[in-house]
Amino acid sequence: MTPETTWRLPPVWVLLVAVVLIVCAEVGGASMSRFKIELTRWARGTMLTRPAVHGLVGVRDVDERILDEALVKFDAGLRLFHMHAEGMGLVIIATTTVAATLVRTAPARPVLVSLLTVGGACYPLGYLLWAALIPYVGLERGKALAEWVVWIPFGGATIVALWWLTGVVALGLVRR
Amino acid sequence: MALGETGGAAMSQLRPSIARYATARVNANAPAHGLSGSAEYDDEVRGRAVYSVETGLSFFHLHAEGLGLILFFTSTLVASAVPWRRARAALYVLLTAGGLFPIGYLVYGAGALELGRDAGIELAERWVLTPLGGAAIAGLIALAVCLAVRSRHAAPARADVAPPP
Image 1 (cartoon, rainbow over the protein chains, first blue to last red):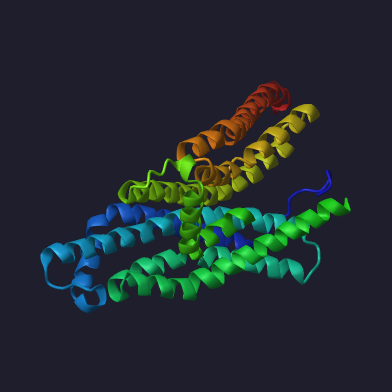
Image 2 (cartoon, chains in turn red, blue):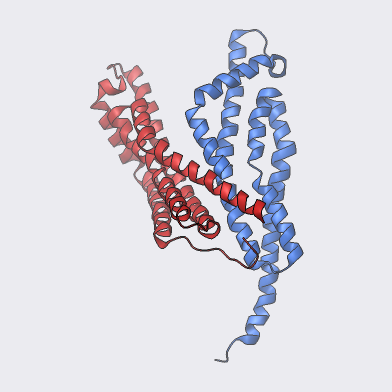
């Protein structure tokens, strides 16, 4: 960026996605705190209706330990959604602003902006999906599903886009 | 931020490999970790060292994402709101050095493996985290001072040009 140039805004839909993501994160964080007991009760109840999925054997001492571990992960999934959605909303605004300003070639800019936005916005939803899946399909299967459906494709898109953007910025510095 | 994202992905996907590597490094640096030959005690030491590495990586991921954003927004603020050239240059240096702060957590993890948990953490804290974190704090305080000075200068100027009621 030359001294006389200034930041260019990314498209409005990108800013809307980022703001909606931050709103979802805030609402998620607030709901997590406000409805903690109800959420825990729902998750526990759902797990108890699927003993085979969670390896429950009917012995209280054993089952309580399994349920506790699953509930800790369920809570962690919700917390990680809150944290990542807040962070990725800001990451989308910052990185797409850099892309809109520094990537001048027409096909590259929209692709980069789309990758950063879609990847960044969908990635945190994986934590929500994971938390929602734990009571139904168990810890490991829930994690594997969230990984293959959300984290790997959308997280991968974000990583590829960020390194691409890094390359563009570095190339710009070298050429100056 | 690209490093932070990649570190987070690696931490998640390569967790077993990282734990295996960390355990192997602890075994290779047995004197630094004070391994005694007693299986129970040594397992506890290995567990603590592996936990330190995972903590270092996790903090690296978290801080790299966060400080990348802080650097982006604060340097934009410097470019927009600090009119003095030398002050701007000094602020860029301090804030950029502060932006490297998360690397300290990689040193933290690697140091805990190579030098032993306490010595490695002390090395990272003393030589990387404290100076770079100090630079970030100094940069942010200096930016706040610059903004305060500028707003004091701007207030009378605004009063001079304010239209009569």
